[in-house]
Length: 297
Image 1: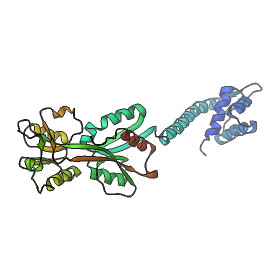
Image 2: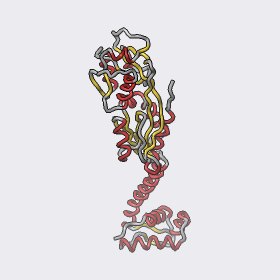
Image 3: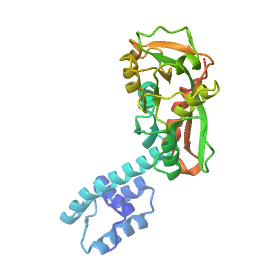
Image 4: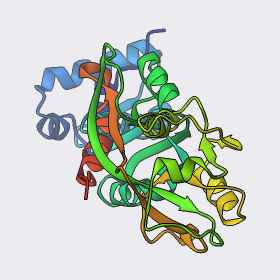
């Protein structure tokens, strides 16, 4: 048996609600012969009489009433599906997979996600805590939609990377240390250090800052979690060079923060798939991120 036709089911429901073939014809903007054809084809396909044709009113048979009840649900599901497709196409609904570092998620994303929840409540942002390198790889593979990555990044086919914000790097020092107002590579290299994981661009950025002064200091430990690094600094285990993402961060309590000389800046960018490879919802997330873009102080 062939599948039921939604247009024919809609015609059946209209006749049941309005009482006559003529009224259904006017309501559905269909020619009277088309309405009759819809019902005769439905009855022929199912092999049962669905309507009793009386001079004044068409009444459903027992089989017709059962089908009409199911038809209402089918038509509602079809309308809901159509509306959902339109919402997804317009970027009002959908799942967006976003990858970035822990620090960005903790300090920079909450305001963005709050704005999205207000303006686009139908968009579900799924977060992944990963390095910039893994973010770019997963964007290229199509398993992520948007990423916030450290810059610079090598160009990749099918991906767009645009600057988002710059954060000043600072020396994070234990509270008991006596420190100068401006921290130089020479001063810091002579002290125990806590570094970022060697696979990160942050590690390379800080290493280059020391290298420009002709230094290659060793670190006591390397981590990829800023909160853990700050905890170790507070405990006096060593100093770290990290971005100042939020000056009012409660985790800064008990730390000494010093500006670097020469100055150092961590640059972040928004990465996403280009053209038809990106969903409308992904572009809405990118748009929300751009509203929180920040240039250097």
